[in-house]
Length: 186
Ligand SMILES: [Ca+2]
Image (cartoon, rainbow, N blue to C red; front, side, top):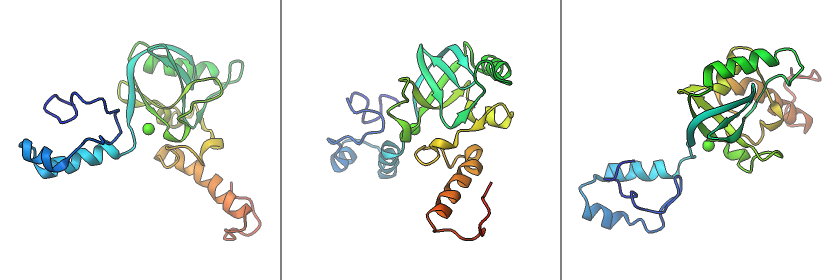
């Protein structure tokens, strides 16, 4: 956001709507077009995007890393734990893609309170590459379906196929879906 924008010196948090924002006076007092104003307001009220940008300082394992020393757990993906097959491969893949590079975190709005370890949860982009998606595409991670019902990212292309199965099974359990007879959807 440049300093020609209306919120430049505003205390308003990214993603909030400025309560002092007056469209009429702003339009009168500036040469910003009405369409520009509408676009700004829409952008301000949409789901928050990247909220943390920094250097990837440490790789814990395939699904956990530090950005500027802040521990981040990747949303919806699960890589092998230490001692399990695939642990080393996943960790090394994340190291090569992310370590000492630019890391951006889009916090999962559905898991904004973090997890029981106090970690932030979200999608991490390493030099612009969606790490969550990349791990799934490379076969290094599976979708952690436990959080499909609350995650902001359940409908992302890399997660939806696994998450939709959970959703359909839920509908079936509660009797709202009988399309597949008595067979379990897998
Ligand atoms: Ca978000």
